[in-house]
Length: 449
Image (cartoon, rainbow, N blue to C red; front, side):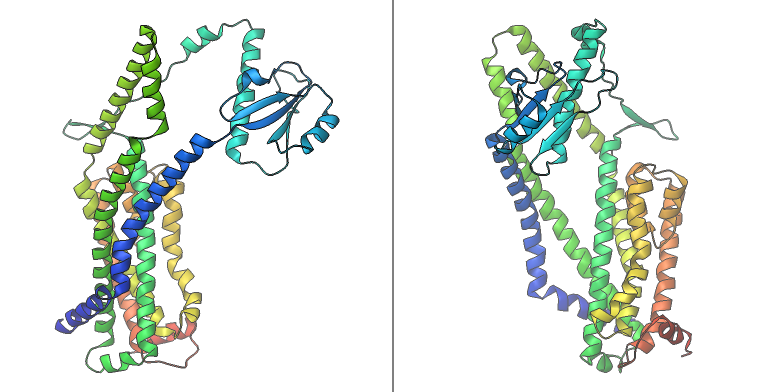
């Protein structure tokens, strides 16, 4: 055990003392908030300086009336009193955004509307334009059925369900599915990325030592299995340290950046300017009510967040990060011992990472859609998918027995993969010049000590 500890120290210190580790650990947390801040700044500036896109309109139906009176911040409409073919020629002579053709249509089946563009437009612009047209058709239907718009508007009511979880003891806890979804989404992706990245680091380290013949000196004093275990745990310690530093720095810096730009968001400035200029007390009261409602929603969101057991989630995240890393790290180490270059390892990487990929895809297809469904349950129990699946489920208050069973299975899975990898590692680490495939690796596994 003392030899394994020495190998763990060696692997940890070698990587921590590297300039690349220091740079990555410090620079990455600085880059991410800087990128966020830069993108928000560019978005705000672009929104301030954006000009409305000109849309030429040929309205043969005579019902849309998309002229300058219908202009929005996004679109500037210009009616063309001419036939479509002539309008196409006129449009091609300009640099305008689009030509909209509205034929005579049935209100119940508004078909045949066409938009002509000189380049492929974004889905957002097409969606905005479709919304404008849908609203106009809706207004025409209201006129046909002689329904007052204001009456219909007053009939529309929005419902915001307050979520309360009842415990077995009858205790009530507020909840918010949106927050839980976001946490599951973020944590699941982080596990997937970190396990994959640090697993490949193990494989690269084993390949480097094998090709440099350093391993031949090391295995003369320690057993190959001890070397493999020490390398896996040592790199895991590096990963945990780096991850904790990133979490602290990124959280602190990102909060500062978002807080700074949040005070300068255009919507907030516009609301303040409008409230200053408004003289009508009734309208002022409406604006104040909207602000009060917004503050209530924020306070409710913070209250829901305070009910989340962050300490439990952090513990579960670290456990599954280490468990998943150790499980897959052993397999990556076995592959690294069998090959002599990263190119040779590619044929083995996909089968190894396929279960992890299944867990990643299952996160979106099953877990976040139905965290307590049967598929979500099995994905979070099977050791090869549980690191991503259970971390994605944990925020949704997973039953204690399921969490305990999943953890137990993951520990068993790590022991099982370490045993398999160790039998391959003890032979492969000293083999050079051998063309390796799955058949050869199985043969190494079956060899007796």
